[in-house]
Image 1 (cartoon, rainbow, N blue to C red):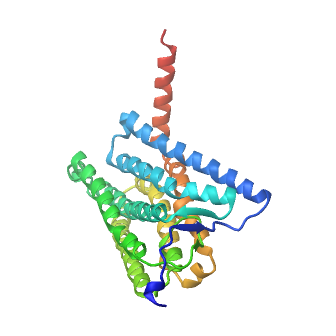
Image 2 (image 1 turned 90 degrees about the horizontal axis):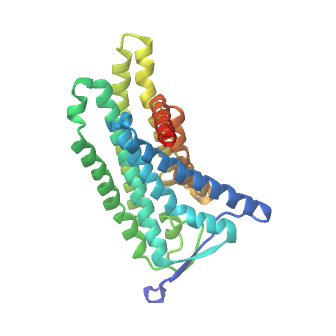
Image 3 (image 1 turned 135 degrees about the vertical axis):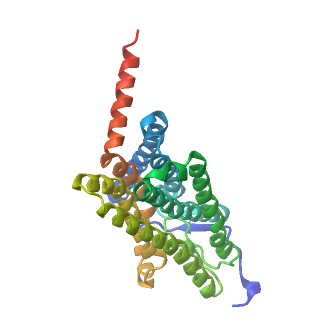
Length: 314
């Protein structure tokens, strides 16, 4: 196609999910309830870590940073999900579409790096307990958290540069939010090399932290198995179990969508898998980190007792 016949699309159409009748309204109410619970749960963790001195440890600092990230991550895509569930195919300005794409990938990459840092924290706590506080000082915690955010928001420029400069002949995005692969399908020109660059980038962003995670957990398992008693081994493993669940769900679903076989994307299953890492994992995060954690439960009791004592005062 002649380059001069290419047109700049001012507005895209988000197709969303093909749901009709009462199911559409039920899906909307269900998604809205999960979204509100996600916001409440992650805010609860942030406030709890800030309010209780018993949770003033590096592990819970990074957990609160993860919860803060999840607030923005889920809020990046859920508004368009809710709108398409309620109204069907919905228009979105191209500028807003590319902005959503940038922040979605920025926050996703930041989470990849942050999950890796959280594994490093557990490795130092279990394998090098005598030097743990020296290695993981408050300054180091803040530096690591900041590096995750800077790395994520810098790396996402690749995603936006691969799509924002393309000429588009089609408008309907086969998704409920603006993602790179569905947008590339709408281009007037061949996007083969761009798609390959993106797959390499996402593969690197997913694989590098994953390799580091596996190496760190191999060291953790080796150190834990050397502990003398079964109770000490169980306690050490329990501090890692919540993180392992989140890592498995997040990296597994993201890998299938972005690096997995093309048949997943061709048949539209990528929309369902996207719900896992962009919607359900932020919802499950506070549940997994609170229901499976005795220290968090104790902190909740301490805060509740403090609130009761304050209410009893005349």
